[in-house]
Length: 119
Image 1 (cartoon, helix red, strand yellow):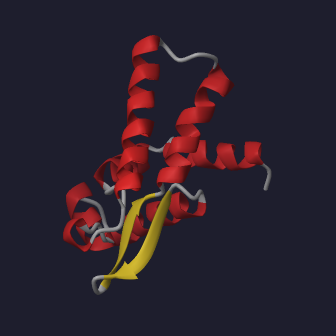
Image 2: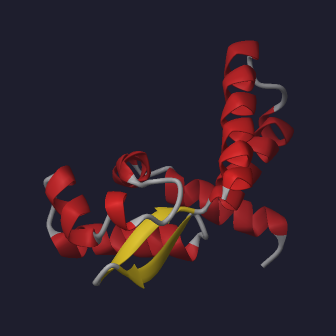
């Protein structure tokens, strides 16, 4: 899969309102203390567990999230590298972002890099 196809798959994956809500609930890194498993996500979203599992599968196949068996469950978190990549390439696709949006995107990427450096 080339870079454009992968970006298309990722944008399609995050283009669904339910998947956006899931992303909003997921932590930025794996952590047993703030773990998000399918049961917890289903409860928070008020949706059946199989539906949430399907959405998690789509996000995982698009490399937007990661999942790993930890803490007795499979927990999920945002794949920071993919999130940062999408934030970097969107201006290339659509042209420059409005200044406030561009500044916020830069702060998010910088914050994530700082969080990675602390590990």
